[in-house]
Length: 209
Length: 209
DNA sequence: TTCTTGCGTGAACATCTGTTCACTCAAGAT
DNA sequence: ATCTTGAGTGAACAGATGTTCACGCAAGAA
Image 1 (cartoon, rainbow over the protein chains, first blue to last red):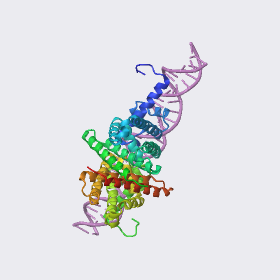
Image 2 (cartoon, each protein chain N blue to C red):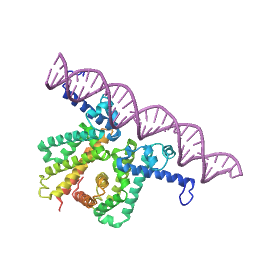
Image 3 (cartoon, protein in one colour):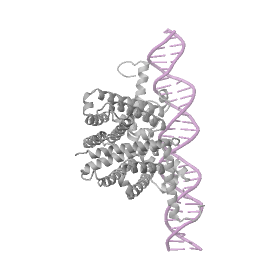
């Protein structure tokens, strides 16, 4: 339109699609995705309600696209973290730091996942549950290489991975719910996460069957 | 009205209030409390929309009452469990059993708390967070008497209590989300909860600072 | 008995919702 | 230069929503 360069047809379409996704993510931060309406999203994206249907069949459809985008961010983060050799050595401190920092930087995505994981529509909830399962399996592969765990049954490794992811989700929730005017809580949450993970890791050493 | 005995004025009022609460709880099982409307609740309770305002100022107000009722159920359960001397001896198996059974019997209440804890309106979320904090503190008092923990700092005890409650909530979520036609998953969830708690307890023994 | 209180009624309202339709008008193909 | 395509428009719709109001009518007080 009035943007710097003239946009190709595809570029322009992709741009409004992204605007709709951004608008939905922004609006759902206040009151939850299930609470917002197609019309609100369209207005926030600067588009007439009917135009919405050129990109998504329904709000549920938009929700699924948002799940995909959020987990793409999350997976990229984890892949980056795995490249860092330090993460293998001091896995706990790193996990706590990475977690809090990552949540702060992608607050909107984490908030979306945390809320819609239980509060969303059936389709969105299923999609998130599936993505989290994949995530647990990926983490299990990483954990299986740790010295204390290398000869555990794969069931047990999976269980530990679930315990970690579960706490990660819970801590992410806490950072998300953290009021913007209380950044002092951040260190507290981080320290809490660290201690919880240390406690779990201590359990590793005495584990049997 | 056409009920067996003639009802006093107060009894009748209390009855419709309860009907509204029950209706809201029932309806919110399908799609979440935030998704249901005042009119739906009134209709399900067999009452005209305007009558709603004789009992609650808003749906938010109803939600808070529902939080209170749900946690009253939860607290009663815990108090009963504490009287049982076995719970102190084999606390883990007991916790896993009690948890799954309790959730099954009060599925609606647990489902409400689990969902609205993150998905609900700000007021409802705050109320649930507060109740869960109280719950953590109560559990911390119980845990402080356990042999392995008796000389920990109160901060650490609190942290462990949070870890337990956090996992309890997560496991309750799983039971709630469990499809009705897959009761075989129940034993699996119970066993998972038991192993997670055992792992955490093992960490107790090696804990320092 | 008569009077008062207040729960529940039914109609009305303004507003917001999802969805449809025929339309414009510029990009890209011919 | 002309034709086709399809993203975005604006108006219209039927339905659901929260909230209000005057009213009926039975329980409990006088």
